Length: 343
Ligand code: NAD
Ligand code: 89V
Image 1 (cartoon, rainbow, N blue to C red):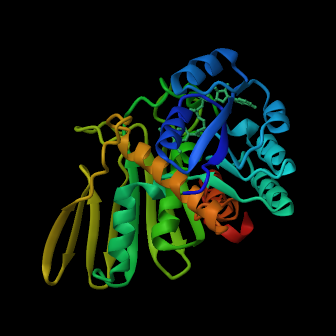
Image 2: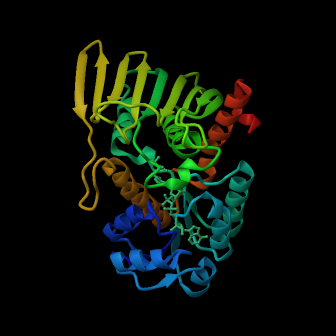
């Protein structure tokens, strides 16, 4: 076994704990330093994960540490500056979603990493959930034939604001934060998108942005899909954070439904499979499907670094997902179809 890759995590907030747990379980990586502008957070997280080297300023981290990669787990306003700092120091970089606040920023970040010759992956983890991977694998067997219609759906009334209070304050909410994941899943399962339209609304009066979105997408090979998400939908049992998938194909249908049930129906009959994610030792329900996907995407990153291959959710790939977010906001505000080529 080669020497583990030396990584640093920048941003030690709510979600970074999952990333730190997963790094600790991956033998091919060692987190040698952490950085957070909040000194109290550095102490809390550094002590919890036994990481002694701590920085409040990312510039100091890059100046002093020899790193094989950096994992940026801050919120979006700092992403561009931190990715460009990593590129300037020729350090391969993972950046949390949403990758950037605008397409211009995202393109600049991809260009900076290209110019420096450093790999760039967006931590777009929903497509790495084991249930979503099971859907993809089932489609690829050809059992349901050629898919012609799909739906990716995330509807919940879970209180995300207590863990992530910033989500209540922005003028954009569900498409930018959660829709971005389900749009990426739609691209992953059904291929790239030529155009989309969307309708949004805000049901919860206590937040600034939209908490319901319904999107209709045309994909390059002719498939039509619906991508819908809501944080204003009370259900029992509460499905958070499960993503449901429906696919109709020329030979049959596939449904990923609540409780991670994957049902496939063809002329030969119906099969039902339990595609529940494992509960990792550090994980907790109901977050365990997301937590496992963190482990899988980080393992994928290490393999990509070792083999010199482009990660599945590279910065370049994520430009196409981010373009769907922008197209959805434009489609909703102007009530029209928006071609992805316009974005
Ligand atoms: P958070 O506010 O809890 O944590 C962010 C941390 O980054 C804070 O501790 C803050 O002090 C620190 N920080 C901010 N700017 C910094 C800078 N320039 N230098 C050093 N430290 C800085 O946010 P969070 O909820 O953990 O979200 C972080 C990111 O993770 C967001 O982009 C969010 O969308 C994403 N996220 C992803 C998932 C997922 O499943 N992929 C889930 C939750 C959150
Ligand atoms: O992925 C996210 O950024 C989270 C959650 C899954 C809760 O929407 O905000």
